[in-house]
Image (cartoon, rainbow, N blue to C red):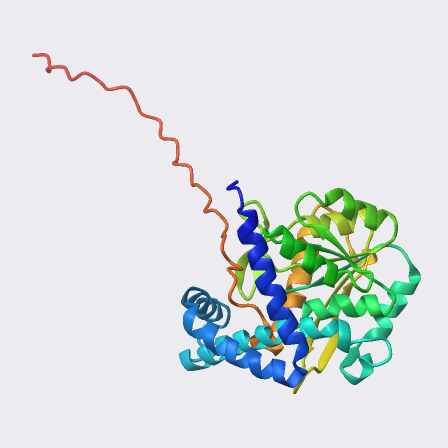
Amino acid sequence: MKRRNAALDYLAYLAVRIVVGIAQAMSIDQSYAFARNLALLLYKVNKRHRKVGMENLKAAFGDHYTEAQRDDIVRGVYRHFCMMLMEMLHIPRKLHRENWREKITLVGQDVVVNQLLKGGPIIMLTGHFGNWEMAGYLFGVFGFPPNSVARPLDNPYLEAFLKKFRERTGQKMIAKKGGYDDMLSVLRSGGLLSFLADQDAGERGMFVDFFGRPASTHKAIALLAIEHQAPVMVGGARRVGPGFRYEVAIEDLILPSEWSGTPDDALLLTQRYTSALERIIRRDPDQYLWLHRRWKHQPKAKKVRAPHVTTLPAVEATAPVG
């Protein structure tokens, strides 16, 4: 691994802290105006990810959208996530137990609360959709702080800063790589473990259908759920605006009693939660991060063995007698 430059990392951290300070000094409306301008700039200069977004939308929806409509969605993606970034900076000061009803609408909360009050391990899944950071923060506000699995940032100063923000309401972050023992500990103690479940898992991942294409998906989520008999909740926090207005909803609750107890359970569970994420995304495609390569790896083509052909020994020609 290439050794990082600590001085450059710290300078980047200072620059981010300055931007954060300026953004937090703005009103939320001023922050949104800044986000829209930033999104326009990023859309113009970030050609590589813009192209990935267009390709992904074409692959996922075929000809359902025209080229112009796909371009509008990609612009919306940049706008949504820049606004989400601004919201992240305001959430610790703007979202509290006393005022969350002014900004958040809950759908299916009875199912969630009943499951949480039962006790025992629970796995909560979402994707790079809506405002997943706010959703994790909100559960902490409600008194059910999740243990969220995420890949740490390469810059250690920025990682420490982001981790402190994320854990402000009791949420605990677990490193995606090297954090398996912590995940086991959470489930064994009957805790809430959360994942972003729409990331490419490489060549060795479990391939399931996602928008009609094979998508490499991490096996660990299903295996952990099966081993610990943990219900799986799939949901999302979608913007219903204008402004900071979200709907937090559960799309599917998958209970251990629904599993068959066969080796197919891991595949069936992975497909079911992936299909639930797809339904969420289809309702608001401009709130999904189409800019990442979800279908980066595809199943390898099976090698077809050539049929075995038995050859007869050559017969030496002889001249006729007589």
